[in-house]
Image (cartoon, rainbow, N blue to C red; front, side, top):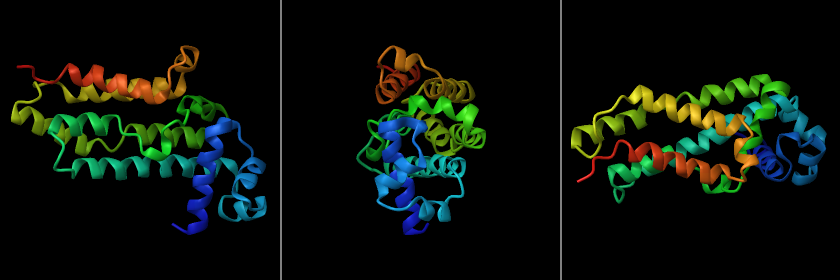
Length: 188
């Protein structure tokens, strides 16, 4: 990825933190101290930019998950809880609950968001299988667990319940992970 492209994507995330999806390309240009013309040489329109922001965000989450999985100091249960609730440091405090706006205005970015939410479970499922094998997780239906997790995340992102109840995405994600994993951990 070019340095300019990465800078624009980071800038878009920064502007999103303060203005949500409704930020303008003028807002982004001001954030970056660059002309809109320069931004448009990398991203032809805001829809394409948002599509790329989705991939950029999920790629960052995947990198964080990989570092968690390779951390020898974490137990299997700690690894599972961490990767299910991973939120890279750069995204702490980002209000992801406004992403429902994508559905109507930027359908390609919305579809990409849904695709990314529903993919990349291979390592998590393998970790769950290992947990059952080791006896630290009870045998449970992984498909139901995955569906429940994905459905909750989609509702967090696409609904307005969190905003109405003044619950941050970060806090909701932690609570979701605790609720789901407490149901599968073997207790002494």
